[in-house]
Length: 615
Image (cartoon, rainbow, N blue to C red):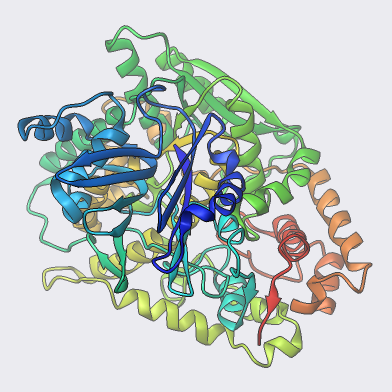
């Protein structure tokens, strides 16, 4: 896991611009604290920041290879999980290897397969390869966009990086917030439309896409998408197939030359990951698996049961530890830390995000990084297997919008009235919502319920899951820490996509099929536990803290937040402890305290990034 930057300009001598490349690379130093490297030629400049996970000596980047009268140079961020199969194919075709790094295998796979290489990869990746034989740049991103890749075009040159902040180190790349950016930030945010960002003329390579940049400009192509086809297996066959895919996806991701652990909440998803990982360690004569969980000071005293947070984690974590004999560590975060790191979390994302839902993960990774370098998490299971309340609630299914973000009127009201007159958030949200649904493939054999659930599954995987994957990458990599997401294996997602809803939600339960499979190897109490989301603080001192921070901001009538947002409405939010905003800002976790923390992040972002506002 790493970060990279670069630019290609056919009109300029890039070898005279290395100082710019270094500045870009240094801006993402947190992603790769172990090494840096550079490749600079006449029209191309590549920079890399490395977090060492595999082959410390053999995996240095940029990595170069000369082959058939051409030179190939790669910078890469991610992990390829099918290296064994790729290496075998390459060796059969005459390739030899100097290391066991996946970087070398990826580079030589590109030399062998060309642009079709993306159809041979199983992993999480973003990479750039400069090809002197064709004088062009190749960019690619993994199937679900676990790893980020942003770019902009300036005066015919392409500038690209793992994080947006690096692009702003390039001359002429400005921070501009226009109507679309405002609509993204306050209508869609903290999610974003795939391919876009909140900044004008700053884009991302979409998940499952690659791009080629040469003298003819930039061409982008999609290489994979979920395909609808009939599911022909019965329940027993389906459960056996699913268990095989789960085991393969998880065990493939346990390869590391650095200390590796799992995050364990005692929920179904993290328990499945931990079960297979612990068995792998035991079967291979390794020390007991290390597991980590997060909690908050006095959360046991302040926890309040709700439909979306039905129970706390500690009992179930202890149950799993006793069952698997793992080496467990409990990280306890205090309220002042959550508030203190709101700015770091915003900087990690380059935009306001999920408030303390972000800063808590950032702090969690910061603590785990002291002992570990890599962790597997249960992220993405709810999206792939149908675990969220909105898969079942009629009001959400019939909302006609993104079901995790239904407070559209409140979002509109939050805009400064002068801006709200020019921007209709509902129109923008409706456009993006319908545009996304147009991509869904239905089958004539789909039941009415399966067809409806295809819609909600598509939206959840392409929007909500993307937001959580962004969060995982930025908060972890800000600490030079790698998170892996086995449930995001594209083969697993493709298989689950075509299972009829009646089987996927077996017995009418969220993730019913996954529970059916897990019952073979997990305690019943874990299998039957109602879904509980990522733990957040219930300590009332957090509300007091962020309320105080936002109050201090609003006492300054010159605070930049007033230029974008409705000052009177924010004062109402403060006066009612967030209840003036009658529905959650995003998902079910961003309620009153998180909304106030989000507004604090907005002001921090405006002060730190100072975007030019274009209307």
